[in-house]
Length: 130
Image (cartoon, rainbow, N blue to C red; front, side, top):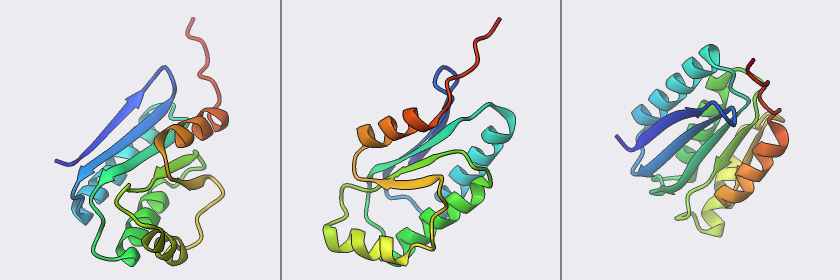
């Protein structure tokens, strides 16, 4: 499988990492697994790292997959989506133009470190365990 979903209890961040070719089926599984973890764990934010995925066949398909993932989350937790490094400027513009309006809690980033910095600023610190 080219998609991995994991939850870091120390940071309260759910990480979704894609590599290589990601199909709709795998993206759907990642959205379902993420939703499940959000229901059962104190997730404060979601990092969707698609930096190493292959470009989809069209910008509209990329936009559809992003929109469907964000819609599947159904909560107000911050979602940082890191776009693929294979996207050139034209492809990226076309994806963004094709995106249904993203909610206030979701952002698209060019680099993982910038996305992580944004999430850290948005995610409240986990409560200490007694």
